[in-house]
Image (tube, rainbow, N blue to C red):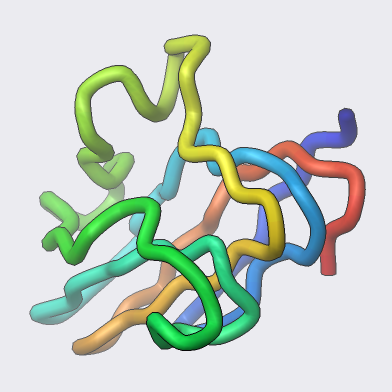
Length: 103
């Protein structure tokens, strides 16, 4: 599987097709919360929440993903349909993903 990094500054589609989210690096944020979906858009009608809303830590750090998911572990947040991230607040971040079909 190919590995790729995708920068995002708001809610956006990160990838289409199956893959996994390895981690999210947050360059800067102001009052941001992040929610990660296995969907083509950020709604329950479009898919499934795979990581519920969380607030990233300090800027210039990896976002704290749930235990067993993320940097330096073998279990990632897997998605089947697509990867969509919704953001409230302001953010400049990068999602690191593995998958065959990515934007």
